Image: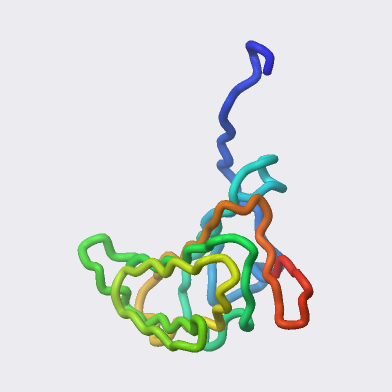
Length: 143
């Protein structure tokens, strides 16, 4: 690395994902992956502004992932909605700030966000440099 080359990267704009275009349910807040910064882990954040009655279909990853929801009101841990996760055959619900940790290979989704009364920050990430879902048929897809 040359003396003038920086060891950090600031991303101060948004990279919209294909499913962002025209969405009335989410507003992109942040996106980071190997395409944005070579070698960077994946991180995703969106503001949920309306119900998501059915999230992505069941899938798994070859890496650990976390999925979190945070109240848009800093005075409370109450989300102002109900989040519902399907993980490894179980249905988990929360109405509070929460983070779900999903180990590599564990099937998860769909998730739902219901009865939204105010914006909720939804975020996810993992150590993999490129976000890809592995489906039952063995195929991988980014979205």
